[in-house]
Image (cartoon, rainbow, N blue to C red; front, side, top):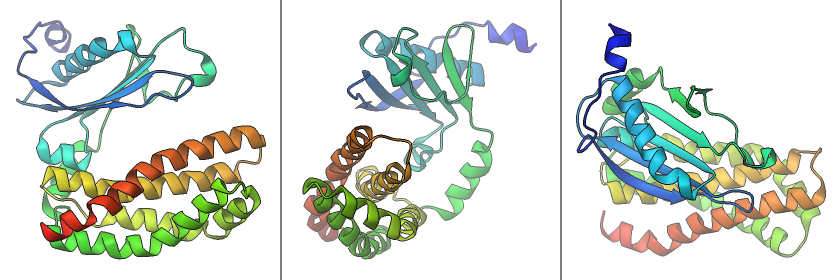
Length: 254
């Protein structure tokens, strides 16, 4: 029966909506990430076919394509994916290829099926959506503790004081990781735009946490280490500036 239904064709039109397309390119590869939400209940193989269709739309212009598929709007907000897909151009320089997210099929697509999906969906529905005013207050209070770490490390890097940056990162690694985890513990908003704003808190902390990881990589030469840290600060700035620029707007509207 399984083999029979795997081969059944079905019309993909109207079965999903693409909500995000992000350019994730770096100096070594053209990369993009696509997020889709289902519009109807489908079998796993049908969802997989959606992933293939999405990847095929974008792979001609990219070397790496990621696709994330959520069952509904709540799961999209929670980043609770049913399936993740990945495609990597075979001819891409091995040094620029990302880690595989799962097993590659015979057509060259890589898949990861989230075994914990149903459990997480039930948990998120009961516990993770919080009042927007509480979310704003909690994130902002933690951001006040995070901001000095960010500013010191950024100033040290932009001033060329790599030794100061590395010493500070190592001394404060535990605090930075704790702040990153705190931002992720406060819950989510069902207001999609506000939830995207809240996501910037965790994103900027994630990039700072990644800097700590690069600093600790003793096997990296100074040029490579500086390049990787520079990329982290570039992305961190986008989220940090967004938090500061939109803070008053979201405070007034909640």
